[in-house]
Image (cartoon, rainbow, N blue to C red; front, side, top):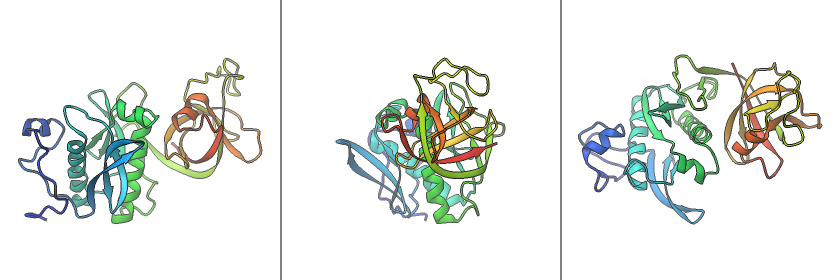
Length: 272
């Protein structure tokens, strides 16, 4: 690939090498994009965004300026990093993490993108939940290209601790079971009451009720309608309405865009 630039990008205008090095691109010249990686502008919800696409599919959208970089500049840097991952042939998963107090997307030791709070707000989400979505998108797209894993989602899933940092060698999870169904949520009428586990129910905690999973089990819940994800802890029994597989706390439902509809289709990844 040396000597060509299929993506047609150049060094971001007005960005010196010091700025590029600060956000993790240490090459003395722009890296050529992988042939399957592209960036393009688009208008979403009446706002200009820059999309990073892999084999034509949107992996993520850059909606905000960050660290002194504009939308296009951020998209170019992310695209360079993704190209390096594709060129390396690594089997590392894309996982959320923390760096300098900010939520980020990592691939092994490689920094891919910072998930800033403003971007999360524009997605009606949190930085942690949006990081899960971006990682899920990237893992799915790269699995299609590289056939990196026999079971694409069967690898390690890193938990992003709320308000804390992550060490991928310790805080990692394995998906042991996956299933789909209808989720609902419960809130004000139960807030402050005792759950089946003996804990006091707090609708603002990331918890859930499940009929059979042991108390304390962590579950990655992904809305199949909004593609937003959240990790919850099982501390109650339910739901008791036929056809539903999990009852989320109000906060968890809010994280994945389930609050207004009340119910929605979800995928549950049971973690251990």
